[in-house]
Every structure is written in structure tokens, then in C-alpha cells.
Image (cartoon, rainbow, N blue to C red; front, side):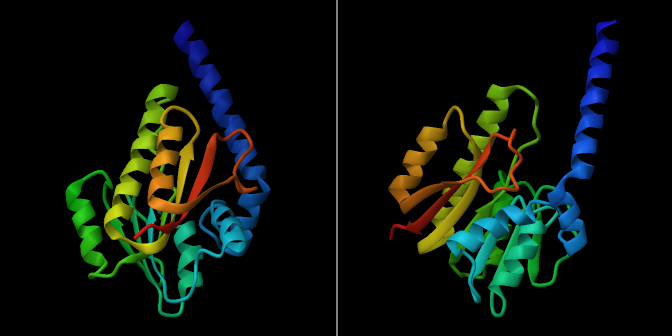
Length: 213
């Protein structure tokens, strides 16, 4: 009986999410304007405010699928820019984007990403990565922070001095430690919560600017 009750609750939750998603103004706007997801408006808002993306830049987009951040970034670094996107999930091709499918946690994938840079240092690292959520808060928080730490490690190796990093995190265990690590490696650190982030979402974006030499 308890299994049936649990199943009914899950079905109701799924239906509520679908209804909210379909009626979401950002979802409707994304479809109308040709963006792959509502997440495009998160990066657009942050970039309009902070001027991260400029023509000619080399940008890495981690956790890129379905590709809305890559869409925004590729347009804003043209002409002359280079954008390398990576995700565990497949992503349909985008003009001006070199896509790598693989797990960012695996050394072989990191080596492929480094090779795609062809010796260039990166101007900006974007990370909208999130793990598959288990529903267990402690586990999910640990996975989110691990991805953020790996992103910082990647920046240590490949981000040029003066370069910037924008990474999604959830506030919770490990958050303050990550903030301190970013403050050591970058000149400034700010938090961003774009309007397109759902209010109930715990996500927040850390914007680290001016990597120390």
C-alpha cells in the first residue's frame, strides 16, 4: 500500500512540474526566440550585467547540453572566438561550437578537452553542471561541490591570468570552503541569482573574476 501511495505522490509531483514548465514564461519565450532551454536567459542576464563575453575570446562551457549557454556564448564571442562545450549527455551540433561528449570527472575526457584547446589558454570558463539528483540532500550537495572543485582545478591549469569563471553551486556543506578557495585564486568574487532561476531552486552562481597570475 505504501508503494502505491508513494507512486501517486510522485505522479502528482511530475504532473505539477510539467504544468509549471509548460506555463513558465521563460520556457515560452525560449521556444519563441529559438533558444534550446530557458537557461539561456540566466547567462544572458549575467553577461548583460557583468560583460563576460567578448568577440575573439576562447570559452569553455561545462555541462553544456542541451546547448542554450553555448548558443548565447557562441554568438557573443563571434567573430574570431572559439567555444568548446562538454557534457555527459549528447548535444546537437551548433555553429561555432566544438562539442565533446564525456564525463568531466574522467582523465581521458579532460585530456581530450585540453587537446581541443590547441595550446590556447582560456579566457572564460562557464559551468552550469549539475549531477543526477538522488533526492538525498547530503549526497547531492557533495556531488555539486565536487563538480565545482573540479571546475576550479581545470581553471588552475587552463584559465589564463586575468581570466574569469562562472560556476553553478548550491549553498550548503562545502560552500564556504569553495568561496575561500576562489578568493585565493581570483581577485574578486560575487554571487549571482538570475531572474530566470526558479525561486524554489537552491542554485546560485559564483562569479570569480581576474585569475591571479
